[in-house]
Image 1 (cartoon, rainbow over the protein chains, first blue to last red):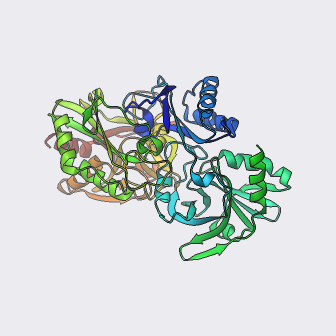
Image 2: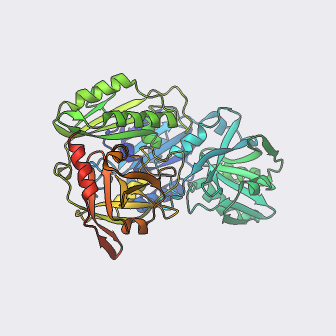
Image 3: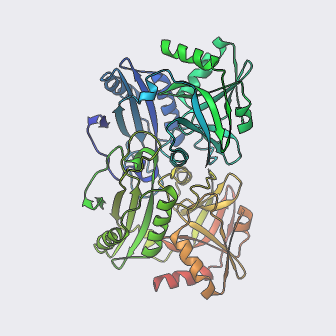
Length: 272
Length: 272
């Protein structure tokens, strides 16, 4: 594992960086495959959108892109995490406007689970809720404590992911992935206007739906909708498209045997 | 300004610290007065409660207390900020349980506004909402982006604070302070069971109410309740008790001339 801070290898972070003080920043977790970054354009666009919404002066995009590409080329398979914070600032919540953005890059080995085609995953329902915070909805900010608490709910390594609901009982996303359910020719995915992270792999799936003759609709989904779906899959930038084989809430659960859409999407993703 | 990390002066932070990665930690902002820490016991209790709720193994309390007291003794008037994070961990949201807590201490000069008795403050209503996240409600976590966005809403230095509502239109707290309103012999303060930070100065005020022949009630308050109150004041650990002289929402506003309770509390605080 190797770390770069503002382009310098092996650096450490200034403790007054607002990324630590307030979680005042964003991140992207990217899959390195064949020494290149998958969906790099989508990652950079989401980051730029996040900087705009948080009024963070973004890093120079050309330099950032070149730095990411150079670092990714060091490994054939890896995960490259990019953190962008507002930078070091004076005391207090208010940004002075004079902060200079901090770039942190961490190149890590690919987790074993992401190397092989994913078997149908076991999913559980979490009790930790996502607060509805429209000003942050969709963004991959450094404020991730709800995901941490939700992920800490289970130890069983066979359970791949937990689904999270907002305080309105709407299913929003997994702790680290987005949700799709299929009903006939319709692919449904939760609306992310109140909370949740708008994943780059979610966006890629939405671009593919037409070619698969599926209509994509973003809507408010409940646990019952998920359980009753014909097919369920999860997406994330590192693992790709992961078919769901079972869903469990407390002591009740269902098995899902239909994985056609997920497998077709995973196949297309391999060709990228 | 001086920084200590895990007791070492001038340190820098490991970029894989979960405090940066996820905002996975807590903080306390303490007032140093006469080289001692005001309300230190309350600060340590809130920190311990936060660690328990986030399942962070807390720092050894005796050592932490001694370290804080030693650092505070360097200045007669100052702000001492303590950050406690879960520490460095492997990739992913799930805490491994083997993390070792990180302590960051920052000793900073007292802001000028906190030196003098506060004049009646101007308060505005923010448009940024607090998401309702019961699992984090009351805690002073490092996930503070909503406060950052709310505080960035205004530039006018004459406005001391902005009040924030949750997504249910309930007034919860200021960006950096807690709210009290008085109606006759009743002191009302927002319930913090869904979001907001339970401040140590708020707690201290609640302990004083009996002696002032006031009954304290925690409840859901709306902006109209605040505007119609006989007296309004804000509290925070550094500034103490701050009487509110005007409230503004968009183009409408009210002036408040009654400050008796706030001034009496401020007087008692001076005697602490």
